[in-house]
Image (tube, rainbow, N blue to C red):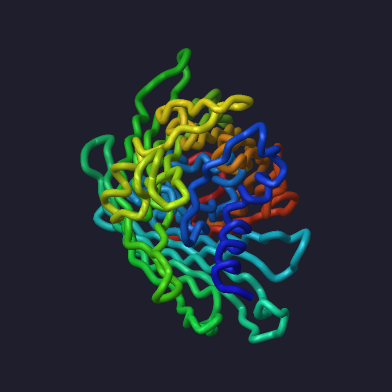
Length: 401
């Protein structure tokens, strides 16, 4: 198949908005979605956060915290943990596409921690054809990201951390498409984060914990799949997460989580027939310039039922994704969870409800999550995701710490 068409189709499957946009009447809604390379870097890898509507920013630290913000690692209760997650992909259509995530951390010197993770996405087997439908090759596309992270306690309540990431995206196996040699995309990126946790507050006389996470993730160089194509931004993102945990009695606690996310990637501008920008700003810019202009470069959307172009500020707000979750935990042994994720229809229309549960026995912990789409089909719809964790060096009977 044509490489450009394959790349766009692959991005659509991974990002999922394209599955919904076809359902929206063009005369009723103007669309201006932001697409990036390796969108899998934004997919929640662990079942616990996934069951909270992807509101994992300020969730208690565990082995999966590198994805949400490495700063949390030094605040973890266990001294060492290893986690393995498995995410089926498009399970209702194909059986061999999946995402696997292996991660760990280890604390040392009481107030510091380091960790690492491996994310691997397999697309199964794909047959490539030319424009006449003749088979020109077969390949099993895959993507992976390898992380290293460090975290330390800065003050009584503040933690800081960073992570470095190597990204490898091989979508074609180097196949020659219409005289153009394709290649695997590679990039190096970094995260920086700050985490605040206050365990000395009370809500209506009950002990409570408030936590805040601020994380800038996937800040790195663009990716290209051919020597001729423009380089694509990776999904640089700003995440602000909040958590309020209330200890209702000796055994039960309730947690409320809320995250906001903003891609630090330029918005597509409106161009004329000569490819000149007429609304918005040029989006073929450097990574640093793209990060800063991503807060003010939206061209403004055509208002529904009119020919009037709305304000640029209004479109910028539509690029902010909201997610929230709720967790009930009994004696640090059993938990039930629910959450909701919201994205504006003009920016992708991903909206879904999530459910989940967790069990812990001594060093062993198992989490499940289930996704129910609200507005569109979703690659993760009606599939069960799970995460298995082992908490070493702090082995103790399950129950309250």
